[in-house]
Image (tube, rainbow, N blue to C red):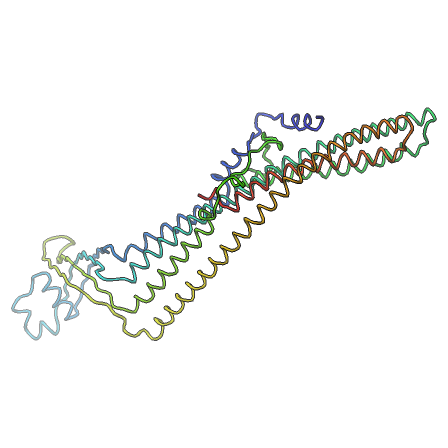
Amino acid sequence: MTGLLLVAAALTVQADTTRLTLEGALERARSASPSVLAAKAQSAAADARVWNATRAFLPSTRVELQSMRTTDPVGVFGLKLRQERFAAEDLSLDALNRPDAIGGHSTTLGVELPLMAPEGWFGFQAARSAADAQRAGTRRTASAVAFGVTQLYWGAQWAAHAVAALDTALTAARAHAAQAEAMERQGLTTGLDARLARIASREIEIRLAQAEVERDVALSTLATQLGLPADAALALSDPLTAGTPGLCTEDASCDLEGRGDLQAMRAGADAARLAERSAWWAQLPQVMGFAQLAHHSGDAPWAGGSGDWTVGLGLRWNVFPGLSGVGAVREANAQRRAVDAQLEQAQLAAETEVRAAAQRLALAERALDLATEAEAEARTALDQARLRYRTGVAPITELLDVQATATETSLSLWTARRDLLVARAALDFAYGVHDR
């Protein structure tokens, strides 16, 4: 009870303290954790790459503006024709060979539309699958951060209870020393009892100082995971004794279908297969339509002049690019086989992780039952040891040993409570229930 009162007192916070429930900490982690923000940015980049791949089936448009002045015979001949200024005297040999300088402005609007480009179609689909993989990976990252925050949250609460338990033990050790000193003054004991009690209290002081440092470090680590300064004042309001059962228990139906990393691997495998098809189709010709509208003027852009248009179909085929095409196909095939193997390995690893998490949960439940029984026995034993020493039946060493045992069983009980809450979260994380 004393430990609980100390923890409650520690949670009396100032106005600038951030009060957090576990759910509040998880919500903040999903929106402010640097790891989650980085993963979301990478996902946005993958989505942008899908837009880049739309050139496989959407038209490409270009606008060109050109101004020039030249005495090149071919250039002069062409400019005059385009500007509809060509005259009979321009056909003379002297005019053709040594023309006067002429200037002009040309504005061109061109459109190109792929009509048959399977390489690009498969490339676009591969980019979409890659973006799906990145989004699934982002969800898994957010879930991993949430699981880490859960561990840190309960770890910080455990550290606070450890400080309270050791503080209670220190108070008891000092009381034992005072009692031994009083009995020494009465001639009932020698100075050895008080000295042993003081030694025990010094050892507890050291452990208490260590526990206080661990508590502060746990809170600082939790703060940084939430995107807060390391020295931010946090008040964790969910007690270590609370906590709802995990979503994946023996009575719940959980599977691995929604686990983010496996979804990412499956989408990555789809992307690899599509990339392999794209590499095959890259060896075949592409057909496209094109159109061009041009305006030519001599005095200023878009001034009076003439225009022309062009439409057509084109076929593009790099018939023999050395052996690079063969290499590209083989590389894509090898990458696809590698991703398939990685997916199979990831599936097996996930199944193993679930099995291990379930076993750890069963162990944590059993450990809590045993720790609860041991802590109750230790409290009773401590009451008996105090009575035995007070009445002179037992030496101080027995009392100090039982006091140490009571302290350790109290710490073990808090450890078992923390481990159970973490084990429940670990099983949910193994199944990926928060990845959906």
